[in-house]
Image 1 (cartoon, rainbow, N blue to C red):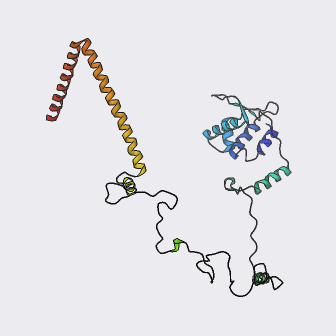
Image 2 (image 1 turned 90 degrees about the horizontal axis):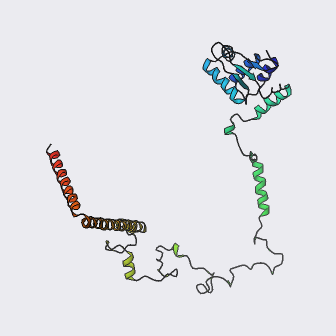
Image 3 (image 1 turned 90 degrees about the vertical axis):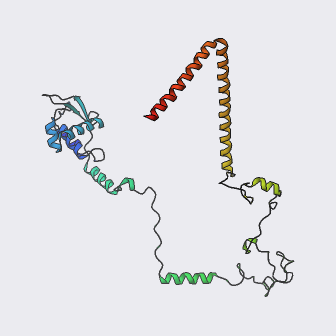
Length: 301
């Protein structure tokens, strides 16, 4: 029995070992030798200490071996218990009371669910709500700051003040439209009830003739249109049709080459062995006749 190693196992934090593992580890440490740290606790006693079944105890011992808390020296078999070595990499120290207090306080400060914990810094608290006295004081300060006259304030001398009435002259603006009144600028065409349609050459583009518009339109419609999805005159349909034409052209070229190649092979065979060619042609006709007869018989059946 090793009280020191059992206490070291008992004070392991819960972040590195769970309760069932700790109970099994304490039983192995209780059965270990002080000098060699070898133990043969037995499966039944580990089950009794942990309060779990046989399969769970075996799994827990495997987890302890995988985590490095226990080293399996020899496997158990019928009539012989397994032998383990407790803390093969060194016995952990027993914590003091101060360390346990710090551990508890750190656990209390830690978030309950680290996955949902706030990752950013907390924002500054909002200012307190304004009372009626605060609102009145703010309005009084705003009234004092507002000055009559110009935004920068009226100048002290009379010469720099703005004269009363409308100005007689205005350097900018539409002088021709209002020579003696307040100048005004022409309004934008977007505010009109029916804005005028921009011309083709308004943005520097050359105007299009009727022939060009007819070429760009859809010939299947009585009126000229620039885009027709049903007829395939839109750019996407045009690109798709061009791709299909290219594929069909390539396929046709391959078929023509294949027919020419087969004709050349047939000519060579006819020149070398006319009898073999005749037999092959006769065999082809026989196979075709047999296929037609079998198809006819299957239809009758």
